[in-house]
Length: 88
Image 1 (tube, rainbow, N blue to C red):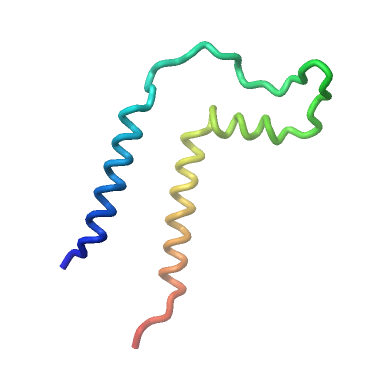
Image 2 (cartoon, one colour; image 1 turned 90 degrees about the vertical axis):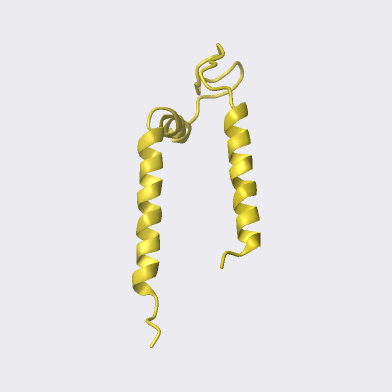
């Protein structure tokens, strides 16, 4: 027997997901300045490359990053399944 609260929450989540995907500006690229960490006037150059790494992960390597997230999630679920106690 399916619980009605679960069905209602699932449908609400799917409706929100569909709404957010339908209003997203797919393919409409605005001309904007490229991401850069060049210092503006009066600012000093960043000392670490953390910002550069973040930009590369979320622009160039976004697909491998998402695949890695799925693989790690599956590994976590598998580890929990293996580690749980058997009901006897």
